[in-house]
Image (cartoon, rainbow, N blue to C red; front, side, top):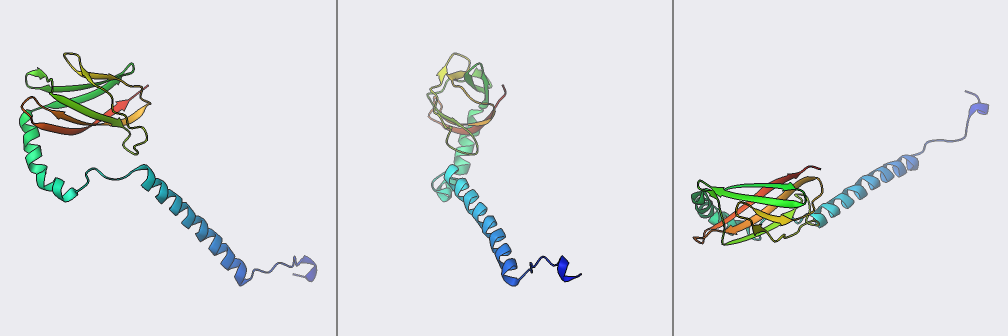
Length: 156
């Protein structure tokens, strides 16, 4: 190589340091943004005190299983249907509370007013396509409390 072919650029130590610093700076920035978004959009809490909830779990499970209920949910023509049945057929509960939302964030959570039509509980609700969760709590006629997360798949 002659001096005529020399461009004059020489890779020096500070060039390498600047490249590494920029690359790791981008990686750290992206990680911080992603962690902030994850924390802000999903609180991660199912219960306020997991120890207390774990102490009551077996009793609640036995109480729910004694009811013998089967839960099914679907969405058609702008209506969410929540079916609660036992060995004798449709079940009418004393009280029903439900939150419909996405599994990944709480931004779309709504609390529809379900009404019993003699067969199923239904509520008008416009849902986008995809997976939804119905987190329901029902109170049986005998006072037993029933809680379940029901997965709802909406196809359009």
